Image (tube, rainbow, N blue to C red; front, top):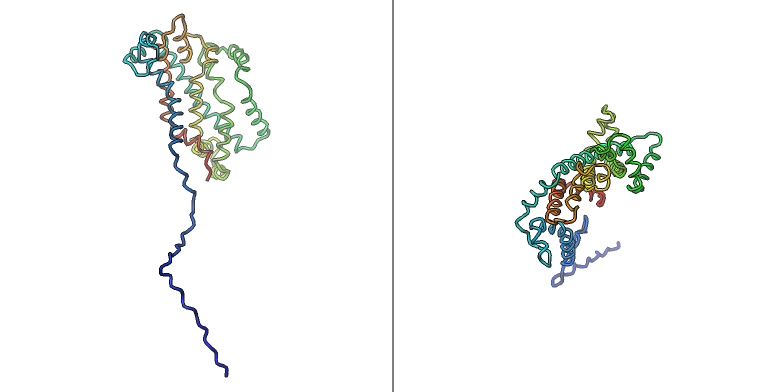
Length: 304
């Protein structure tokens, strides 16, 4: 009978005196970006200072009297004590109240109408199926490539024939909707509103308008806010078309600023006081909508 010899199992080696290797779990998730250095902060500070300085200098000049501004060899860099006096002169020497009101009416109306009509058209181009949809979208996009100056004469003739010349409606009606707004909202609806939500709303018995209001509008609210802000700023700062379509006594704020600078003698403190007043509504609107504007601009930059 054969005798089986048991197999010897080698004893484990001692690990004393040797560093033990720890099995670290692999990293999961995005890698933390490196913190910016002093150079990055310096560049950002320089860009911020260069952007803010014109507004600050306008405020400084508007807070001085005209003699102190023109007397020195260097422009003033410290605010003075005549700001409210110069602002009062602005409203006394020109129809600035009416100009501010006209600009607020035109900018607010065009901003709201662009948001509503562009989102409606964007919803139609993105989710509805109808003959000629692609051709119509191409026609809308092509109009963006046409310079605005080329359409001034036909637009002037059309406004005159409609009896709108000299009225605020001459500024509002042509700007009720924009091609870039339609294209922008079409992209927002296409990316943010799944087809399943539209089908679910239809199965629940919702019509097109109800689907638009309860499904599309909440999904593109951020993009619509950004579009409204940009439209408001463009209408507020527009000078060329209001100069043609409106008389000087019923103009917008930009025409009123031009009247402050007209004449043989330019009162820089008066003119820049008007600039400060005209910038305040835009700053207020931007401050109120700043968070939505930043999130809307960055919405397409990050995926995941």
